[in-house]
Image (cartoon, rainbow, N blue to C red):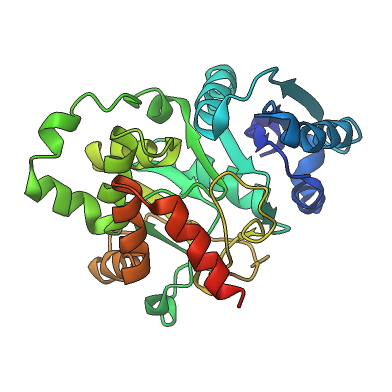
Length: 311
């Protein structure tokens, strides 16, 4: 496997990635892996100090086969940073493993990701590999190490060039899609937040690469491989240095699993698809949040909600 390892790509902004790096270095394959780090520029003077501190730390990283740091002079934002960065690396290597700066990985994360990339490469129905695995209640009596579902994850993932290069980032068929209730219902098999996020994206209310990634997966009727037990912890909910995360939600907190994965040609299981959908469906509060973001008042409501939580 060491001769065909996928490069690791990390995207960072204001948050130090020392925990991400330390967890990667606990992987035996780290020393044989090429690492790319894309450091986004500051939005304003308030962010500049954090960005400078991050970039000083990046210069101290060692322990990988090679390390390349790409510093942006301007703030590109997470979506453009990931689209441009992944494209640059995947065009060179044909595959890629992607992390953001708030993720901690298991000691066998690289073994799992590279193994899955090799095992499923020729199966064109597999769109991506997820490192994160949500705590689905229906998996309690599930015997396999992995399962398939219709939605990708942005919390530690991998894919191949031929999948990535098919993506229509402009969603040219949006006007047709938004009028088709049957297609919207099918898209929402991954969770009823999907259409709402895509709608906000097309209205210019959010800037998400991930929802466009998920929509293209849906169009190609493809699946993502998930581990039954997570190889990822997202540690970025509470420090307020992330672009999109804010506030802790116990629903998404996982424990790292370090056991070796056994891959197989698993079939689609309706009960897991339904369980996965239910797990990702929106709560009433989140539905209200999407409504406010689509219309007006979201920022005010968010500040008021935080105020109430702190009382």
